[in-house]
Length: 312
Ligand code: GDP
Figure 1 (cartoon, protein in one colour):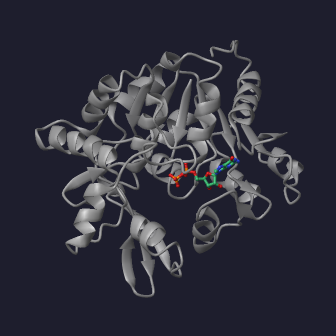
Figure 2 (figure 1 turned 45 degrees about the horizontal axis):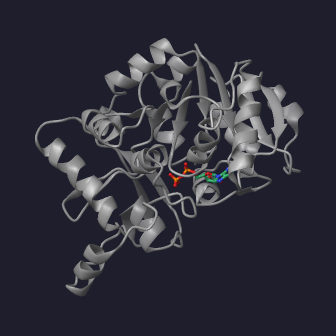
Figure 3 (figure 1 turned 90 degrees about the horizontal axis):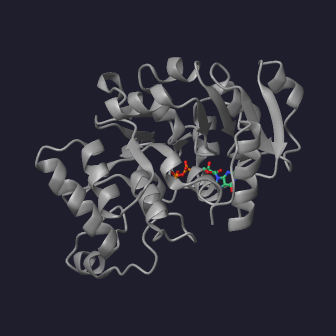
């Protein structure tokens, strides 16, 4: 079982899957399109969220950072006039320091992630989508800024003139991703931001072609005409896309078999999805607690016709 993931919507679904199948049967291909250098540390925010989820230390009220982390370093730096874009906690920073140290000593992001997986004694296979540095840049009326600055420092407020994945032209899927995809039949595209989380993974050469050979289920992060959370709607609109589940299905239509939308969605016309040659399935996708996350995961496994048992 492979799941393509960003750092919020898909990790919620993974949290549900973990209640049904053993971690060692889960492979997560993680977006690195939001990666950023911050105060000499290489931060891969979505990889970290997935690591902390499997390590059992993720703050599930925010879906980022380590639960109970302290901010002494961040605050001391701020006092000294260093305003960091990302609010890295002390333990979080330690993890990122280890990654940066390994990478500065010649390891790829994939190798450094594998070392962290081992360090946290995680059984799942967590692989960054690429070893090449790709980053999402937003053009605003005041100039180009990193996605993290747009979203974290400027609270998603600036007008978006355009946005792009810098570095994507020369980037490739990592060998580990290609290897994982070669041995797995079932792929879930989690309900992550189609622009900043799933978009970069799909933009890598070969990815869409490989997905066409798999059984793929995508879950919509949009209900009606708005994202459940985050800037997905604003980014889709900036790209001229319809902010709706249909708009998401349009992006994925060439390589998915089943499209899951929310039962509360009163804008979607499932016949329009079926007309794209995709099976449309309505489920409760609002993963507000552990039970709801497991319930949605259970329905997805049923759609794959997979055997599972509750492992908790
Ligand atoms: P990021 O890396 O932190 O931006 O997170 P993701 O891209 O993984 O997830 C953000 C997306 O998840 C947003 O577009 C939300 O609409 C979606 N999302 C968050 N929670 C839920 C949920 O419970 N259900 C569904 N369907 N979508 C969700």
